[in-house]
Image (cartoon, rainbow, N blue to C red):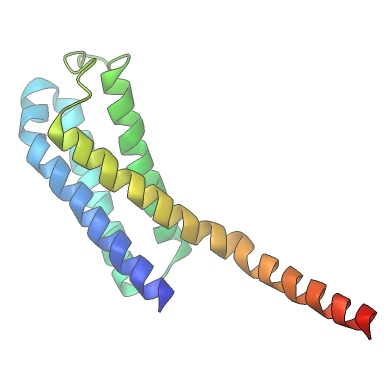
Length: 142
């Protein structure tokens, strides 16, 4: 059940990332075309990852669900701090509404998908260690 809920939440979040960037894409294509194409790649990747997670709980899809929004966060921070080549107009523009919505959704995705990956990597070994620890305590007490 938990896996299904996490997959649903992350899939909807990835669709949200795609929508937010779709809304902002026309201005990017007119200002800085290469950023517009990066938006397209992000949207396609987010929707493909969402579709993959709807179908199954693949580790590669969970990794993409962390990396895609994390990359978007890094891009947002770079455009607001140092700027990017041919894109310095947003330096200091931290209060853009689509940007804030994007950071909220992307941060949530990184947290949820990262948690799932962490549990897959370390959760079962921690649970096994706790069971072994309990069995040792019971043996010593007997």
